[in-house]
Image (cartoon, rainbow, N blue to C red; front, side, top):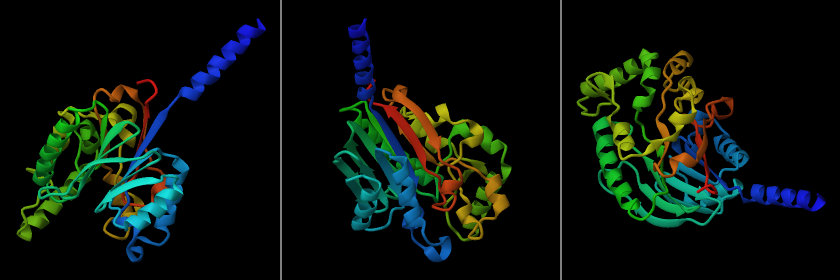
Length: 298
């Protein structure tokens, strides 16, 4: 009986030791964690401390406008020794990163970084905030990149700031008409200035960009785990007194930050969290999104 008990304990310990989760975070860090005159001091340290506490394995960043030396210094503080950066888009990891290709070209508002780490291909993106038609063209271009990726692997993740709304969140926006009114006002101002940029389609929110990504297909893992009432990643209170009021922020929640993955990888997503609590209220105007994947089960 003693020998059987020993074997059971040993098997249990080996099984627990073999578990291998990959925690992924995407975070738009607002003007490179700078502009202290507008957004206050200490954001960089607060961001680094928060990311260190999360113990993520892979982190995608947008609006990281600091130098590569700054990224190297910061990522070491959250225990990532590997990083790649192009413009304001970056990826850091606990494990070595293989850079497949960086796309910096006309028609893309920001670089698209294609890397491989933890045996998974990552595309880090940041779409234009200015015009839905421009974003839709970006989505078409990224679709062609994803098509090339899936010729070689079925494990891939597209993450970042999409500046786009998902049809999965339509009911959230129907409950908050002030959000639509804000975008309508912005379009009227653009028209008055002679700009062709529009963020609504005939006065309504655009869902075509995210629908394009979803039809690749890419799987929106957040939609599976986060209830509608808590499914917002923008804006945060840091904008109060800058170009938002407290009441306006409370009435205009939206989700524009996403972690999307291949349909083959999606069953191994264990959980998703949008960290839209007080800890991240004054780091950026976006909240970070986290997803955990069970790589061992694959």
